[in-house]
Image (cartoon, rainbow, N blue to C red; front, side, top):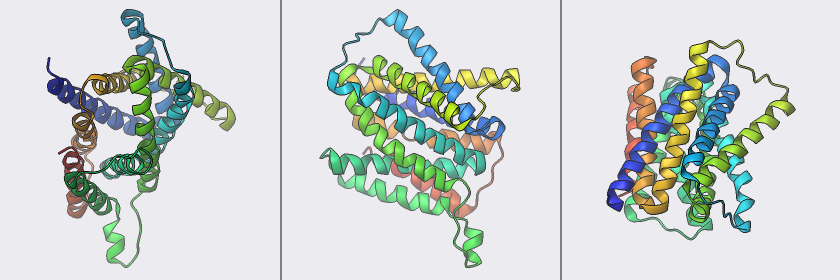
Length: 289
């Protein structure tokens, strides 16, 4: 199989896997809260990676200089998704998902500032489209018409999550290049689970799913396996494929989330917000041209 095909398939897997995870996670965040939804799904993802490791038997040769990056990556990933899920809990899923696209802008900004990477002309246009689209999608235009400036509910949380994710992907790129796709995925998942356990203990929040319907619990575990699989496949693609092709395809995950929210949750958005959603998603794609 050619490198190009592997890159495309990896990106598509990430797009659908993360898009479905965000949709289900957002829905469950409204039912049982963002913290339980995130923790139990990540625990399921960790279990699936450990099970896969028993068949693949990956090399555990982790350079000493990379070890300290694992807890950093786990913390950044946890913070990003906790803010995303909190945004989903209180806001319109379609608008929050569109705002999340800012993580691609933050990723490029940090890569430009700290890693010496530069944007091509088309990527610059894509970034401007994302910023424009997010602005159109995230504002409460009915309030603005009344001369009141107000962000839609969940947008602040989505922006914060995008910031942490922007840093995470630069750190993750370093880790994957050094230790491979499976080990990096499993160890970061382990760090996330440990972090969340400390979070529950220190915040005195309940983490039990005892009062949760069986179907909901099963769905949370399934979505965790799906998300872990998406991360693993994208990481695998990054080790042998072309990141410049994989990343923009995978980052179009909001297409999946938004379409599912409109179809199954019957969410409504204004025409201006709809234009913003489309503009932001197209901007993501343009960054890969």
